[in-house]
Image 1 (tube, rainbow, N blue to C red):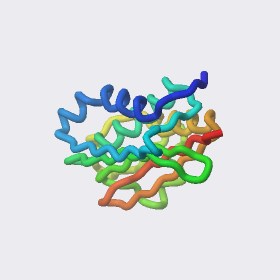
Image 2: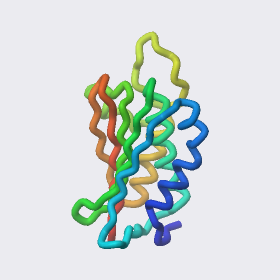
Image 3: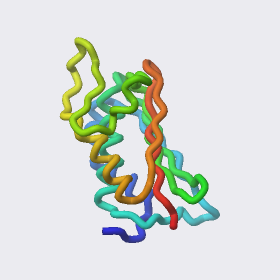
Length: 155
């Protein structure tokens, strides 16, 4: 159900939904919002689903860091608008990256079982971005953190 959406308003709403978790974890959240000549831009997207995708990435960023520092950034790249969620969490080893979008997949953590989940979140995010004919790029370094960059076509 696509409509013209202000992605920055969508990010604010997503942050509002995870605010209790942000406060509980005493997280630091930084916003780097691109301003295009005074217009913040709009994307043609399913607002509710895209917001849920951002909420999911924010929840993961909060879950997988002891002292979360999250940077949410927006911008343009070629014919796409992007939303980036970057964290300082545990990171994901390269060998596991190819599987993270599979349904029910969870990155093996050895004996660490302090983070609960069903392995559905990133699969859901991928399905939403696929439905928008967009793409997702992931950069991750174990012990440093992870960045998920969601690309939504502008046309």
